[in-house]
Image 1 (cartoon, rainbow over the protein chains, first blue to last red):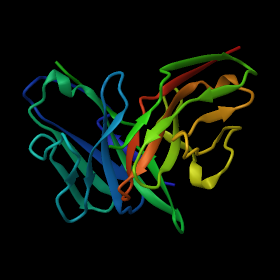
Image 2: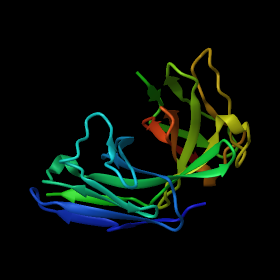
Image 3: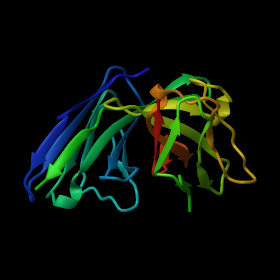
Length: 117
Length: 109
């Protein structure tokens, strides 16, 4: 399994500011992802955090708004830039681990609840 | 385009009753589907995946390619099954998941 921690667990921020969310895994993983869960909505993939190269963003998400770092195989950060109230969401980090040959499992962090006022 | 649909936002049943949480998908490739569960104040966790054909906590789910469905079933619901359930589709390899809207299951005593 994988144990994932996120910091902060929650924050209230003013519009126009930026917040950096940290994700730490207890073991080395190849794949790390960032998801967003807006109020009353499902989880939406923001990007894949690639170690040693730029993150791969999904449609509708851009690097200027959500810059991501992945300095090593156990850590990643997501920054929510120039925040507006529409960015109020839960942001989740997830990792994929190989369970056995051909079997993968995704583990999720506890989430960071962001409120933008 | 790939999509996962869970038509019910809330499903309320009595303890001991059968439960079925519906999930339909749209995907042009060979689908790999999962059910995730989130209990109150806990993080999202994998419940089961279709390729394992396993029963977890009494839950089963069968992939029906003809009906493009992956419904989650349990013959006798328990109060501890109350949680949020998400159906998810793996697409484009590389661990990317598309989630359905989620169904909140409430099992009443």
